[in-house]
Length: 393
Image (cartoon, rainbow, N blue to C red; front, side, top):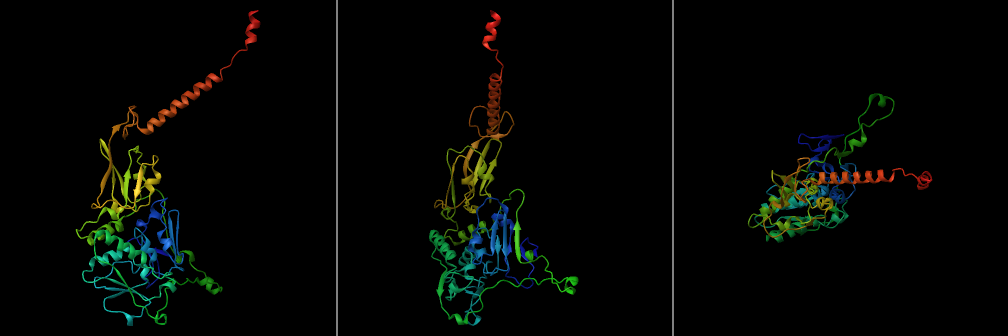
């Protein structure tokens, strides 16, 4: 069945197998925050083993190849697997696990699949390399491998890193070395892990029936969110910013590598944007006389929740900011007053002295009062005119 380790990482009880995916629930957008359309892990999985639902994620272990491509695609590193952790400093080359040890050179590290190398792992690897370029070795087997499914499963991460180093003005690159080998020397392709054996019930055994103990849970990792949304842990996003800064010549990452949010003058201070930001990249700070909307590009995932929820369409999201160093900044600061009805602090848009909520209540009461008056006048009985004329005669 599914179990949890001491650090909160969920994983199945598969003795001796350290390559099983681990799920860090606090970092998962889909689990912690409803309505965030993040399916990066499911789209990267070559066998469809990862299933993302409404505030849930599940991994079918009987289909999981342990290639790590789901972990590499996750923007918040909510999934971890062998090969997705930082590489030792002595590593100069990376080989697929199918390559026999006889073909390894000194300084070689082995990963389950080169497509499981996340951009963050490559950034850290590149930042530590001062002599030469780190190398990913291509043996020409990926297109036919069930974990690869494409000739270059590492291409997306390598291309992203190249774009970043270009903007940083850094000459360092991760190099792909084409060193083909005949497929006859390749080791076995990745396969699902060895799962727990079925537990035998003595009574069932004597009766000739073997009963499995919770088979669905035994072969599945699953996490579900419930209750109020919780902010997603932004540890991996902060780490990305630090590693980009380490690659920069001046030690500062430019804002052009991070999303940018702009607020228009049409903003009416509804505060929904900050309330729906899953990572806290948009944060509302309320002081006694002012409210400030802050934006931290380092932990913005570009999910567009803030843009879609704004009732006045006052927010715009750009994939890249300016060339200046990335930093948290104030998008908007406004003065606050106290509502004469409820005492809440709000930004005045009229001279009524009422906050937007109380103003809506006031307008609703006016409408109801007007409707009741009209209804009472319409329903008042009237005496027929011929009756009055008859009495007068």
